[in-house]
Length: 235
Image 1 (cartoon, helix red, strand yellow):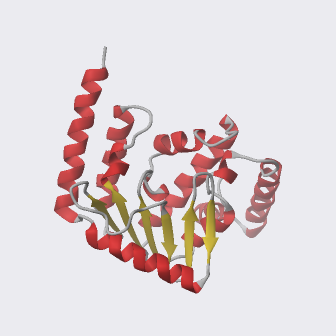
Image 2: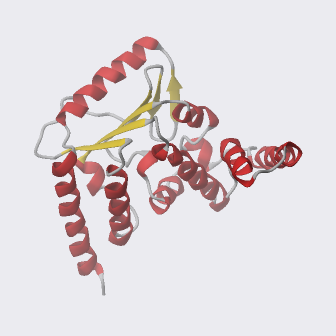
Image 3: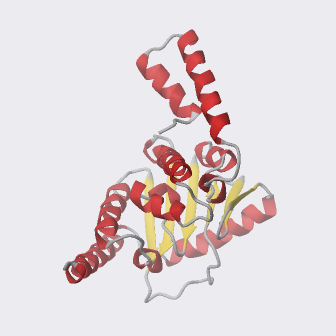
């Protein structure tokens, strides 16, 4: 796993490295990143670029809506691996780097002073890669993250109509940027009118979602269905 410059800084401080050693490590990291950045990679085509990472890392309030795939900040490493492996021209090396970058980005969930709000449709919980066992582990992660004081997780259940027909996912970073997702890429927009429009849309999705105990009941119900499915698939 190749760390980001931000992670390298934190590791250097935690280990008490002197300025000379820390500078040498940053030079080595720059060389590694330069060697791996040439050409098209799975990371390039699935939205783990520097601009997206910086937009998320620098935000104190992150709000994300998804209608098919789990938000990147909530994905387990194995779930993320399936996401990146489905990208065009993915290679094992590129997928490994992309998964590492995604897991690294998730560290902001645990930082005091930040707030993360996620709203997903029930379809996200039932659109699954890999195996029922992978999804059961993913649900464990959702339950753990939902318990954090810095996180709010909501689900729009299938029995409740959506206020807007969703066409794609998006993530708001404070009130200054929105990461707009398409099938094979992500785009960061700082246009004030576009950001405001996505804020209004997110608020409508948020009002339609279940949170708290109702959310946990739904997660536990779907987990039971995945356990039952796993039993039927076991030879």
